[in-house]
Image 1 (cartoon, helix red, strand yellow):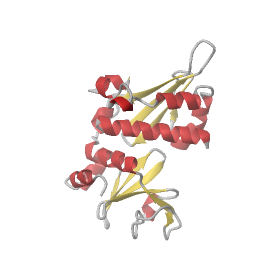
Image 2 (cartoon, one colour):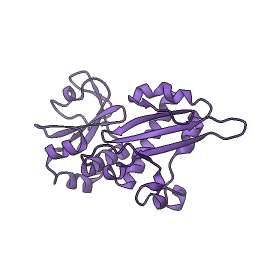
Image 3 (tube, rainbow, N blue to C red):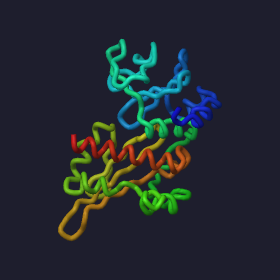
Length: 227
């Protein structure tokens, strides 16, 4: 089973307190959490240890009966479509449920290198065994049209900001906002993108899961821009 160690750890926590920490919903019989990841709702079934997304409508109505996580894009009796979460989505959600803390946002933006340990973790390339933020993908998708970032932001319930030529703040998870900033390409300068964190981010996810959350966010934004 994928992420078996994370499932074991999650089961040690009081589910009601976990839901409060993670700012999500806990339902019983069968036991499950409902967590928002970007613009989708995910059901985390504790009994059979599977996670699936609900593609439309109310997530609660989709999980009152039999879980459907074992099937690819299957319609539930309520008429909703559910789909098993991908490996990295599972990792991100489980790590969040385990680590999340009930803290107010600091409302202070910091770069990845300012995170505890971030100066070593978020640098270089994957080929060197280190990590780098996927800003190049954002530059390629939005560098010539920063305004398009604002246009697609509605899909993610994002808040428009006033940084750069276009910027938004969106919640990857209920206690984890990211701020995306784009500077337009021009004759003198190449396009530039920044990914900024609230100062509380390392309290919500460890660095490896935080890197996953960033990559999932960038992939979703780029996909929205090309659809």
